Image (tube, rainbow, N blue to C red; front, side, top):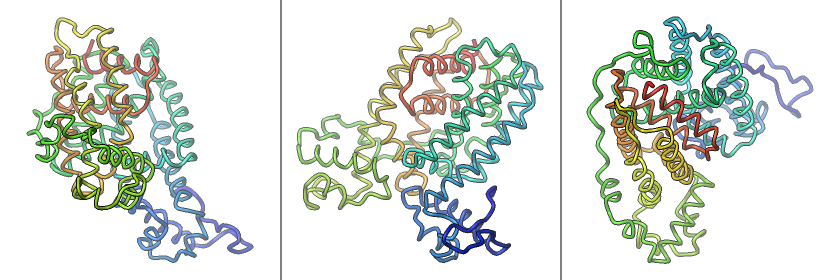
Length: 426
């Protein structure tokens, strides 16, 4: 880890420590990575960290003031690795050498992801809850966008909203790894890393420099067998909305509203049924009259969030050799998608976090993500570009990155640019 080991006041007049102190601090940081990866942000506590590290709470507080203090250090470490990758970028040019530079960048990012694993998703939760972590991310993103832009050949500078495009492409790399990681929990051999990285490099290079079939179009094995939707989730999705939402019942509606707010503020693992019923002002008996447990309750909230999103995904404009969709059609669809996805991003984020750490949700999430991946892929099948089947993963990851926050006009235009140039190949 990058930081020097020093004791915090008031733990001694001399704050510097020797080898044992550095090793203790290192164990605490590494233990935090393990707890975040295995348990998630909301269940990461000082007690769990010290238990994993094999040290006392006193030892912990010699180096860190809180759990979030360690997470700030971890965030700095991760972004430091990402900065190093960007700093080592070779020139990004329209030729095969430029594609190789992008491929090396994507592969180095994959190395960081493999090292930290589920920590990436935990840090997304921390960004929502820890202002310092959010500011670290914002600062490093701006620096990295400027650095990447400085490596670009002049031919890429004509891309509209270039800085936003670079930021969006960078976020898409992370989301692609996250989505494939969840799907691999069900099917470990799904989308080998080298195929995913080829597809990411192709899409990024095509976005920046246009299509060149000799440089940025790489074939991969056919798409894998679909991951089926969990039967219980599929049944809920197929029910009449009034049956699932139960809005005609004020008790259930109150539970769902209060539970949604509680889950968003505490996270899935930080929320107890006691918290839900207390927020709703009802008894435990009222909760168990309608829901079996917290997972069943959360699944109903997820279905409420997913139904309008999936309906919108079914309307995803398809590419074809004749040039459809038009720019205006694509823009209008993106705006609809963003309004739906951003509205429910927080609920889906809680669900994704649970999927990393609870088998009860991992099958649900893997099937749902694969459904989204397949529907994104169908929109690419007639684009007139014989490319990789893994492009559909990149498309789904791009849409997730785009829908993770409210989009302004520049963000929508940048997303349309990536779709048209990088995915449709036109």
